Image: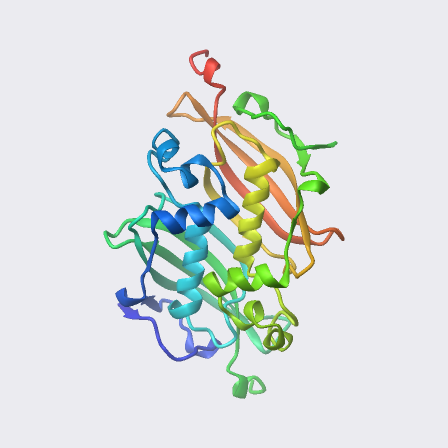
Length: 162
Length: 162
């Protein structure tokens, strides 16, 4: 069952494999022609991302967000409301795919599943949590799939136990 | 041997496995406290990325760029000067790791190696090129390692050959 993302901070002990969360519709982040072009001018100034006319004949057949813009918005959702880890979101590594490009008018939300967890072998105060999440628009189109390995600390008052 | 990134656009035929390029020092992109905080306020508003004082006691022990900021700057280097693909940089999938966090004062450049290429089985006008690149500061510290699968078109005037 998928539940709304928790509002209280979570530590290693609070996370179980199979947990599924999604961000609330009210927390969706909207992409616009304006913010797509602004991001791309700074970081990914290719015709398909910065020029609506040239984008028509580009690989994307119309203005599309840079995948790195989609990734940045995804981080905003994850860190802001999606997965409130007590020590913050600290990524050790990540894999991304963009099955379809994000477009102006997309209102993006996250669905997330915890796929594994284990305690660190060398550092007793923390564990490794693997999470898969999808960045999805209001029509259910998946704009990004992410597989990431996070460093999650044990609840501070329990770190000396066990 | 590592060569400076080419200045002319490249197509599938121009790329060979084992090719190694690096961006010129003059094209390095500098991270500053100001641009690290501005990016993070928008996309990754966690204490270690937005507040120099709180960052001292964060996981990063001092202000660190969001990994997604490092990723965006890396894209700017790649698309701008690092790997001038004729049809633009179109990523099918990517893996990232951040061995060390990027810091204010980092001037980032790229080194890149082509690790495989093959023609598309279904679409004769294009191929799949796998590229590994590192985002490195002026002291040789690797801030991001990227492994990415790109869609690269054949040279337009050769697409009907073979």
